[in-house]
Image 1 (cartoon, helix red, strand yellow):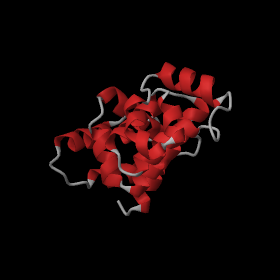
Image 2: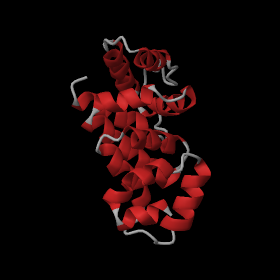
Image 3: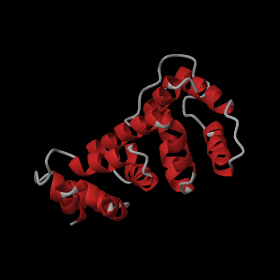
Image 4: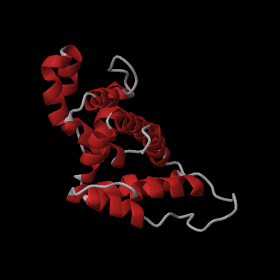
Length: 183
């Protein structure tokens, strides 16, 4: 219902769309994806996900939160689309994205952090070095930094190139965003 209103008058119904965007797997994967997106009821494929992403990219913290949660609750092409949005969020306003992620429950942060396994051992070391240099007094950010630094990377200590990529694209997106902004 709110997606339909947003499609007709985006500016008028933007806040209602964000407020009512689902945060559970069934809401995104069944209601939006299966019942709306796969039936071509939107202007383009994954319009509902792109729309919450567009709102998030304008700096709407609630929409950013919905993107992070949506990413952790989905799979396949939907999760990949959320991942692309997250990469853009970190590129557009890294501090805002980091702040919103740091305020999420540990369950959601862990899901995003787990995707760091997508990085090569060299990339993960570079990321860990960059994160260890962050200076902040913000309690939530300190917790997130500690979680990243204490993350048990599954290829820790692997010296050869026998490592294989996972299907989780978030880690690479996060590294690219960090490096693009001289972090």
